[in-house]
View: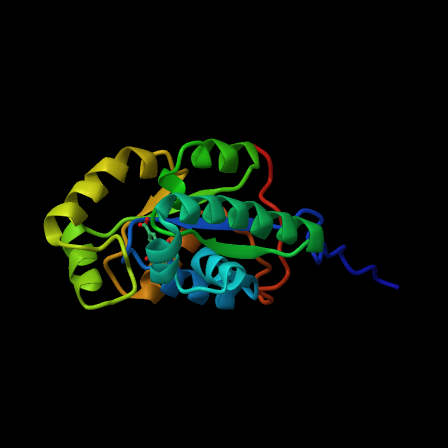
Length: 198
Ligand code: S3P
């Protein structure tokens, strides 16, 4: 009788992909679409923080301040990764706009072996997107938005990969898949094969 080839499912080590980028870069939209396509779980760090705090992000900033928010953000990042490893669950994790720019964040993710993709549309696209959205306490005006972007740029540049994300979310997802850092079975998106070591 012909032996069927071994299928490694679920993966022995979950695959985790982090999306970093400034406010309005499309982390949530692209991340959710990518996860759906891969049949992975999508985790939005901002949602985790809001759930843990029982408050919306603007309220956290208003009532508790940014320092407390950053502490929650760091705690929830560790919790989300810990949970994925514990459950052996592959996830796409959308970071908050400031997460990757916090001291030690890039080193922590690198040492955990988690690839980070920086979604990077032009500043004009970021501005246009954020102008029409509410709920972002760090979006005050154009000048401070540009200054914060410039200040964080060196941190985002630490990411393993950069993808221009001005276009349609589906195109950005395709671009991420083209990076070759996620391997899936040809027919079944949920059959995940780990990246071979080079
Ligand atoms: C922040 C970005 C927000 C959210 C919080 C702080 C930042 O996430 O985490 O308002 O520091 O840039 P999004 O990038 O998803 O808007």
